[in-house]
Amino acid sequence: MKYDPQKFISIIKDKTGGKRLVCPFCNGSQFTTTEDFATVLIGKELSSISIGLSIPSGMIICQKCGHIDFFALGALDLLNNREEDNDNGKQ
Ligand SMILES: [Zn+2]
Image: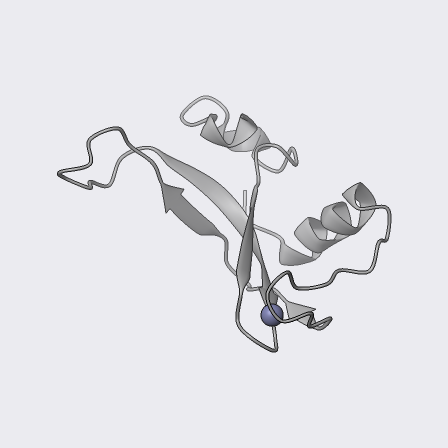
């Protein structure tokens, strides 16, 4: 299943009740997203960061200062076809 940024944005708008977003760092109000999702690597061992478990995430990016907010796609029910191999986004 391909990541659909329009669906991601639609769900974020729905979850926030259409609330106007404001950047917590610069008070900017213009945001964008990316065509592709990001993966936030997670792990327990601080001495060796490795590619292992990850949280697939959609991003909202402030167009004024570049601040990025990550949203776990699993929590937004956007990982339907990936639940068997990685459900870390459902925390
Ligand atoms: Zn900003």
